Amino acid sequence: MSTEPEVATDAPQASALMRVSSDKISRLMDLVGELSLSVSETVNSPELQGLELNSFDAAAHRLSMIVREVQDAATDLRLVSVDEVFKRLRRMIREMERETGKSINLVIEGGDTAIDKLVSDRLYDPLLHVLRNAADHGLEGPEEREANGKNRKGRITLGAAQVGSEVRIMVSDDGRGLNHERILKKAREKGLFGPDEVPEAAVLNKVIFEPGFSTAENVSKLSGRGVGMDVLNQTMKELRGRITVDSAEGKGTDVALHIPVSLAFLDCIILRLGSRMFAIPVDDIAEIVKPNSQDLVEISADNGAEMMRLRGAFVRVCRLEHFYDENVSDLRPLSDMVTIVFKTTTGQIAVPVDEVLDRQQVVMKPMVGALANVRASWGCALLGTGEVAVVLDGERLSQGGAS
Image (cartoon, rainbow, N blue to C red; front, top):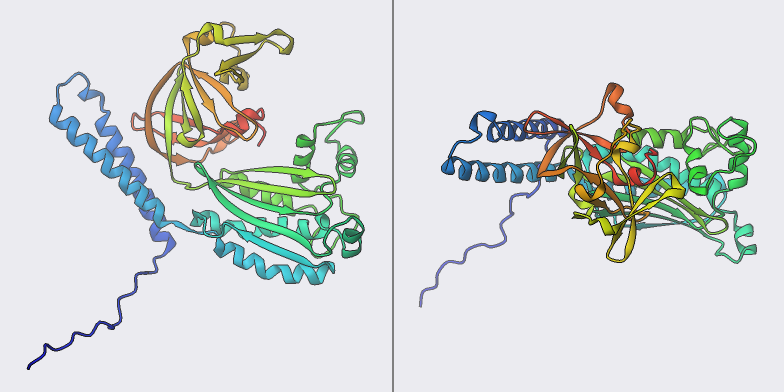
């Protein structure tokens, strides 16, 4: 009785990973962006307007879908796990313990969250400054913690999660919290506030990012020079991100970094207000509505501020004309406009526009020169029609444009 020869099944398989230079990937991203713009320019060419081109329209639609898939694939090539940065920071905790004499428990959450490689390469130093501040200023010593009913070992949580079109990186400690009284005193000494001015806690929290600002009485190897948080703030601006700080006395401080998932392409709704074009990331939009006149309320006591009733709840209206301090004497009534409802961490806001034009995956470019000072903007989007749209950041709109 003959038997068939056995086929070896344990032969080594080819590796599924391949190293590619980040410069080559960046070059590919640039080319894909140019390809997307070229396709849009061709499809939206004014010479094609009014022509019956059924076959062309079908082919153009298919080409646009393929380009979109290529954009998504190119974006995925540059995504890496944020845990690469977190692992390096974990090793620094032992050094912080030796420098401060405190016992620290670092908890890592969401290390598998994907982030743009360009962002990952620049996150280590800013996050290190935040961790050092949390260890040196935030956490109390073992005896003080025990006297306050806390565990002698301080806790710092370093976490990441994708929220819509951005990645949120959080550094939280269970320490003493920000000393608002000391921060205000130092801010007054620097002339940031008047002697009788008492700012809100959210405004005061942002003072720690001012260049050279520090409340430390002594300079240590970890902190006290007043440069770390300024570096963090500048890095976030360059990455088109933002920082939020929340602190409760005796309970700790939360520092959150909000950064776009991709620095190249963004899925947006294109809008028109007057002669200006705007783009809004799709994930930031709660809904798009056409308000009725009976759903609108004007609050005369608050400089004529407007509110919109949406399913029983009132939503604050943010007119871009007022936000950008334009001299507009005759504004269109809200009932004649389309309203974009933003989702923000402080609640919803409604932004009225003249027209919703399209949904596109746009090529993002940073604002440069005088345009770098445009408030509440992620940057600009290059459209296939040759126009440039300002990409709005709903969070900054809701906060009055603070960076």
